[in-house]
View (spheres, rainbow, N blue to C red):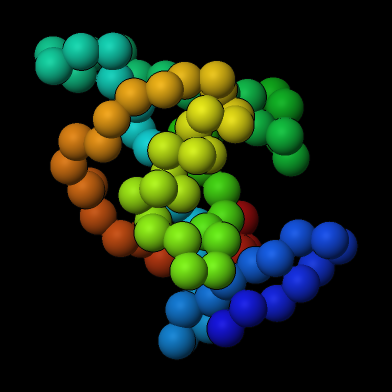
Length: 90
């Protein structure tokens, strides 16, 4: 499902969850350093770069696009860490 809200297009899965993609960016194969950015909603919190998936966009492409937009970082995808459902009660 696709909805437009405040000039943004949001996509949802068949269960009604908003589709989002994120990248857990590491400096090298040791994976001892992780990139975090300050959140736009809560600027005093550190978050993993991520955001909404465009209609017909692959989630991997969306994840790379979001990390480029939010952190100015280019890289390559490694492995998928999982698919998560997040409550909006936070």
